[in-house]
Amino acid sequence: MKLRSWLGITLVLLFLSGCSIVEEAGKSLDYTEQATSFVNEAAQFAGTIPDLAQEAANNIDAKEKLTEQLDSMKTKISEFNGLEAPAFAQSIHETISQYNETLSGQIDEYRTQIENGVTDFKNTEMAQTISKIQDTMDQIKNLTP
Image (cartoon, rainbow, N blue to C red; front, side, top):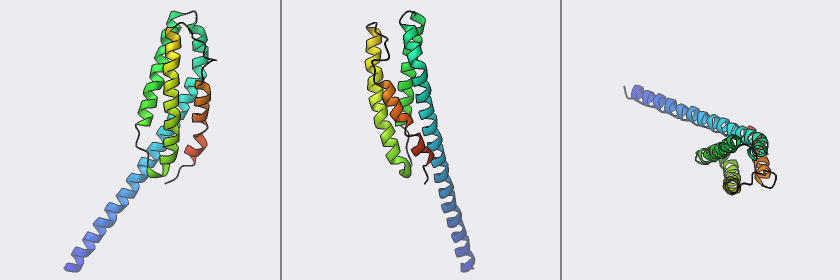
């Protein structure tokens, strides 16, 4: 009878530890997908902002859309930085978060320029920072627990 109890307890513990491994793998996959999505969104942002900025110089609607895009990117930055990265991805998450902090400050500076009537995107450093974020894609693809 005791043997059966011990066997039952052992099986339950093995099952629970297996669930933990599956759960951790799921979290890892979720993080990798979220990081990939964020980097792709940053690339898309970088691709649309220059043309929108040029159009915003002469078009009030484009200027509003530009401001909305900047606000949206800041929200995405905040959401990404708030993610809980699994241990094996901590280093890349910290790297991207640092780039994000730089980009967030650059967005604030650019918004100030826009408020002062200057929409020239070429004089910002956002493109370089976004390029650095994009350069992390290979590292993200190679993440393994």
